[in-house]
Image (cartoon, rainbow, N blue to C red; front, side, top):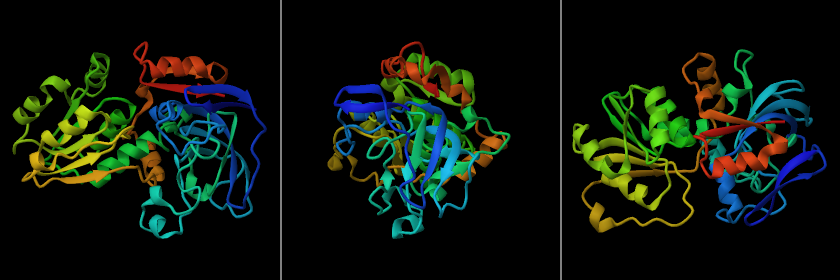
Length: 344
């Protein structure tokens, strides 16, 4: 089969590999019908994910059809259309039992697909713990509708859940990249009083304004002043930082009111500094990632009910054989790209 593979730092290649096989009784083999590219894939490419293994097939955003299951798999069967979870989790350890599946103690627990074990920018993928990692897609939900369920929609849903957004809140979302927009989609489900999105890119600000006219949009240079002018208690009640920059990390706590919640959703590629003397007295609560991707079935129900629609994020479509060009477009943010769908 064709598989897009991490060769060495700075280099991915489309190569021929054997089709994966069942290795354990809780495995499933999925024929990938649609995949995507994530910023985390770029982090692997550029050496920012030390645990990533050269030689692995990259990719962790995908949907497909179950081809084969291990003897102990009970919730999916051959022929089922499924969304694949970004995380591998056993479902039985202490952390899984508490819903903290990102911290699953299994050797392949947490983010493994496309990082430590072969992922889904390929024609087929082996999914360990398939009962946990695969969610059946309802008949009325298309592959494109379900494409982001297992990763960036799960991330947005998790971020909103742990942020405990209330009806009277002013919510600031920093970053309108793909994960930022998915966080926005999930935040809108809570119907807070205001949502403000801060984004540097004029193209992405326009995207948010065109698709979500009820949302306020601001650029970083005047974000703090804008938030103070459009909040009731000297800052946002909830801040979700989805951009992952040094400046946006500081902006997050500066724009929060005293006693607010700051949820760090972004994956940083270098350490950040908490300037505690400057922050003293704000009494902030920080909540941090990574995603506990255990809400996929609920997200699929919301999509089926018409309450979440992530299809507008798909701005480009490529076949697997042209994935290198898709990466070039995505990495360099060319042609107004938000997300790329990869067909196999």
